Each structure stands twice: as C-alpha cells, then as structure tokens.
Length: 136
Image 1 (cartoon, one colour):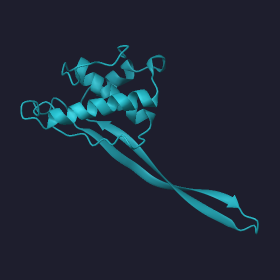
Image 2 (cartoon, rainbow, N blue to C red; image 1 turned 120 degrees about the vertical axis):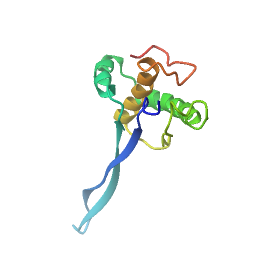
Image 3 (cartoon, helix red, strand yellow; image 1 turned 135 degrees about the vertical axis):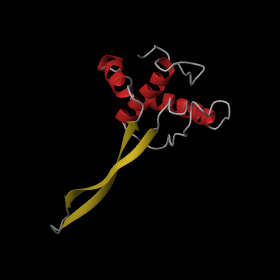
Image 4 (tube, rainbow, N blue to C red; image 1 turned 90 degrees about the vertical axis):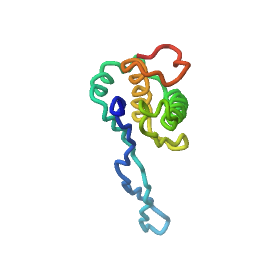
C-alpha cells in the first residue's frame, strides 16, 4: 500500500546567473550577478499528469496566495499523517515545503492539484475541510 501515493518531489532545476549591465559616470561597465532559483514539482504517481491537464483550466485558476495558503495547510496535515503509525502507510513520505520560499505559481498550483487529486481521485482525505468553490 506504500506505493499508492508516490513521491512528491521538489527539485532545484538550476541556479543560473544572469547579468544586468549598468553604466556608471566614468563609463565603466559593471556586471551584477543575480541568482535565481527555479523549482519544479515532480509527481511520480501514474495518472496524475493526465488528470492535471484535464482538471486545471485558466477559467478555474486562482492566485499564488490562494495556492500557497492551501498548500501550507495540506503539507502540515500530510506531514503529520506521514509521521503517525496508523496513517503512515498511506502517507509514506514527508514533503519538504517551506512557506517562506517563493516556488512560483506553477509549482504551487501543481502541488495544490496533487493534494486535490489524492483526495478526490484516490479517495484518501487529507484535510477535514475542503477548499471553497470546489476547484476541480
């Protein structure tokens, strides 16, 4: 039963440096490096990606804050269940999610929909209270 819910994985796609050139009064050019981290959510559960493509649409989309707030609730409850002996067989991994990090709208949206998929398609409730509006 441990393989019912696959691994939800955050990966660092890359730390890339981009340069912005500024002109200073003596006409010397200065390169300012800006590190930008990009995150990608990889869901290993078969069937999720196909379901996600059909479940999400721009008409149903919400903002970054909406997804972030719900993901904080989902991750907290998920991790609690993953560490409890009687529910850990369904929630076999702890999700490393830091609400202080800006993962971007794509990652937040996909993570939110993953939790909704587990709840609705797999029939494994995570939260007692579902998000308003029944996005799906």
